[in-house]
Amino acid sequence: MEPSAIGQALLAVGDQWTLLILQRAFLKHTRRFADWRDDIRISESVLAARLKEMVANGLLKPVPYRNGRMRTEYHLTEKAIELWPMLVSIWSWERAWVTRTHPLPELVHTECGERTDVELGCGGCGKAPITARDVETTREGTFAQVSAPRLHRKITREHDPLSYLPATMEILGDRWSTVLLAAAFLGHRRFSEFEAQLGLAPSILSDRLKRFVELGVLRQDPAEYRLTGKGLAFFGVFSFLADWAQRWYTGADLQISHCDQGFSPLLRCTNCLQPVARTGLTWEFWQIP
Image 1 (cartoon, one colour):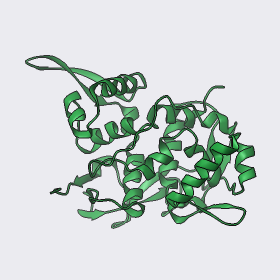
Image 2 (cartoon, rainbow, N blue to C red; image 1 turned 60 degrees about the horizontal axis):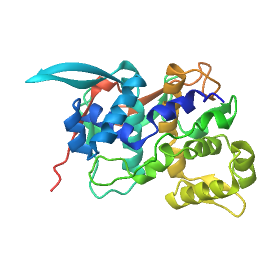
Image 3 (tube, helix red, strand yellow; image 1 turned 90 degrees about the vertical axis):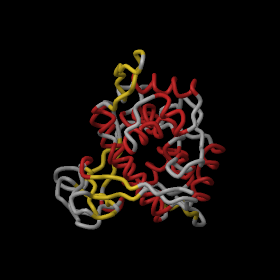
Image 4 (cartoon, one colour; image 1 turned 180 degrees about the vertical axis):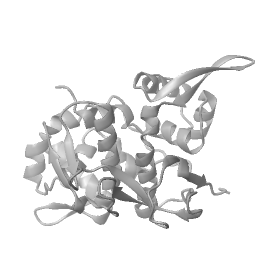
């Protein structure tokens, strides 16, 4: 069965190394093999494989340059650049909900000149903030089309202050976790509902639900699993992933609507309450002792 748009998007970016490569390209303008290797401490063979896949998926463009001899650096494509709101949303979610040894870098909105955070808004009607409770999410096709098989084992690392933490990667980097969260956003709460909708083996479903409860994404009532504030807050990341998938891939998918114009997610500065653009954001990095 052909994966849906979100399923294809997860195949392209639902991997920790891929997300870290993209993150460093956005935050530090990393373009060269050795810089990624040394910064995220990835083996050369794994890095070479990821870069090759990201080129094949249209996320990176190889560009030759001369440094004594001809070498290759990798530039973000327009397709990859359009992922910036999702990466900023991950930063915002981790800042609010995940305990870290070292603080994340500060986000500065250059339009107002202040350190800030971001909130989800609707580009159609201008309303912000938007939560999962403010939209209607419907499904086209089957969840099996969303849950595209993972090609790589996920790896969680906490060696530096920028790396995504296990709480994030267990949602984005696992074959069934993202689709389980999508089912929760659709209003499913009972074990039997998740089992029927996802077609998961009971043992796998039990494991994923248990991990989400341990992570604080779901809470377990006597007969139901309900999204916590932490789980609901991940909707911003999910909405930008869904929006990006629908613009770059085809196939039956989840549809999110808010107003007469549907739902076009945007980020708004919590300080000046104005929409933020990629070029209007800078990062202040802390000095780690």
